[in-house]
Image 1 (cartoon, rainbow, N blue to C red):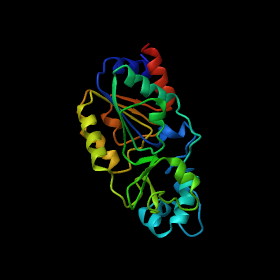
Image 2 (image 1 turned 30 degrees about the horizontal axis):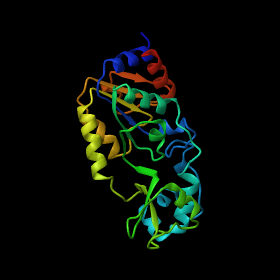
Image 3 (image 1 turned 90 degrees about the vertical axis):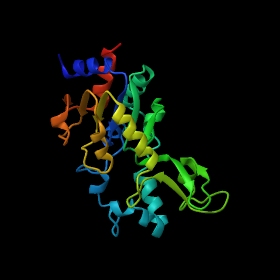
Image 4 (image 1 turned 45 degrees about the horizontal axis):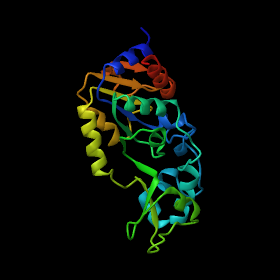
Length: 245
């Protein structure tokens, strides 16, 4: 039995699978990651500030114009489309096999693909709010209101609902993610090296039958996994779902 056949078999017997994904899920849609050798954090983008600093809450407050220039150019990819992996997960949810997607990505592609239960640990570029009055906005206002987007109601700065360095994760999102993982019978971890905490620590709540790792490099959870697949997430998930038809 091949790894793909084994994955299909496990998923066919699952009733509450959960997918926990990282940057590798989005790179297959053409969105660069942060930490690889060619990722955003490895590039020299500004003569004065490092990318990590430019993606921080303190930088957003102190240098809003520079923050939004960096944000629009490096973190927002509105032309990106869901890949085969996103579509496969949405199909598994439709079939009643997948109960939730938990993602560290901010691109919103899981929802575009059709997934309904998505917990975005690091927020989303597609949601924004006024820091003064709380008014809600889509991504269009942030992209068009240059250099700094302001609220149409009170004039306050509009901040993306993205968790920046120096900001905590949303409590409700974390609680929902923990509950979903704790109740899962199968946990698929894909496209993440499991080094970014606190998000990576959430998989420790899994008590189900099958832990599946789909990642091109080794992770700290490999030794505990039922199945480890070193391949592209999109190709792997799409082929497994196709076998289940």
